[in-house]
Length: 204
Image (cartoon, rainbow, N blue to C red):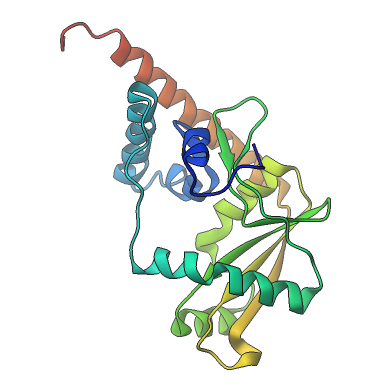
């Protein structure tokens, strides 16, 4: 389903009841049980009702949506890579998948984040890429089977030499194996709760 447009009705339908790469951080949040449990129950509700939870939107997400085309153009200009925009890519057998910001050639992909200037400074100063995005990016590498993923941080108000920061992330097979196991366990929990609730009669 990579041909569908992100944010469209078809895109929401494709993601319905599935654990997505952008929420793998929540799947791994065992020390924060409320976060993991809340996401699990969200997917259960989606499967039982056939409707997606209301989309989350705030100033940061709106800004990211508006700036993504400019960030993509900047990334392409710097790297010479052509970004193929895609929709939602489902795992072959599991109720999970991801929405890449772009695929590159046959081996790569990219994740684009539009950030505040202070965040850009922190990222450039620290080097690498923020650990908060590791589950999502390694998850996309798992789902797509690709070898590398470019993390691109874009901050339009920064000077030109600091506006676009790019770091190439390689597959971490050990991390991916652990992540896959956690996602399967999580989805098993979703399945179990769905089955339990479907067996309830008149609220008992």
